[in-house]
Amino acid sequence: MQYPEFKNKHIISTKDLTKKELGVILDTAVRMDTVVQTQGFSAVLPNSLIAMLFLEPSTRTRLSFEAAAQRLGAHTVSVSDAGSSSAAKGETLADMVRVVAGYADCIVLRQPYQGQARMAADCIDIPLLNAGDGKGQHPTQALLDLYTIRKELGRLDSLKISLVGDLKYGRTVHSLCYALMPFTPQLTLCAPPELGLPRDILDDLKNHNIRCTLTSKLEEALQADVIYMTRIQRERFSDKSEYEKLKGSFVLTRELVLRGNKDIVIMHPLPRVDEISEDVDGLARAAYFRQAHNGMYVRMALLALVLGGDIP
Ligand code: ASP
Image 1 (cartoon, rainbow, N blue to C red):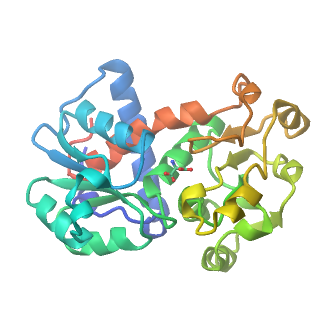
Image 2 (image 1 turned 45 degrees about the vertical axis):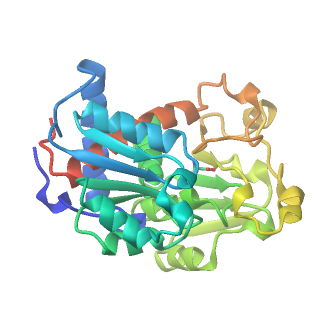
């Protein structure tokens, strides 16, 4: 099966994706999940070369993209550290992607500046997947979050979802807000006052009639179908004393979980620092490691779709 409407599409922000497109991506990821479980590999993209440009630290996103590419039979070339690339010599991102676009068929890009993924995509005519642009967006994470919610709960519509932690700098939260919007969730936004959701995203949610409750009490966030914990984003603070003041704001313990909604699904984009204590890991509803595994299927789906592969 092929989806020509996805061929050569840049994936920059979940704001750009319709409910129908989200459905195609999630359904394709289900097929990729089956491919991996039954065959391990499938030659969907045997003649493609994918460039991974990671100019900011990454473990899951980079490795799951690499694994996804290889499971589809594609080849990869990669930069995994800005210091070892010509960025360290002062090369602009625009020049770097223009050069790499001459070597590869698709670029997966992570870099530290909000908005620069779109700028880079505008410089090239091969598809670019934004793997995180500073405190902006992280659309492929939000897609795997949607996939996980659907897999854990069997549906996406009208769920009560709590987003907890650093909603200001957490790009996964920004992307998830837009990815959830077509499914009319009820959101509880739980953050210290200093780390609330950016005003523009809050306005967009309100304009789409999404009910948002703002709180700084973790107990309130536990009355939901899903609780999505996030790390305080230390690297985004210009004032480190501000980070020291806010770190450890929310710690989800087993005892707290057991006092909340008994069926709540616990998610986290990882890495965790101390937001979820390790005694939560053994609970059946702790979904964060399953969530990370789902990333590979979703990234297989995205690569196959934007490169026009024949979906098995
Ligand atoms: N891994 C996620 C990201 O790259 C979440 C995090 O770093 O806290 O945004």
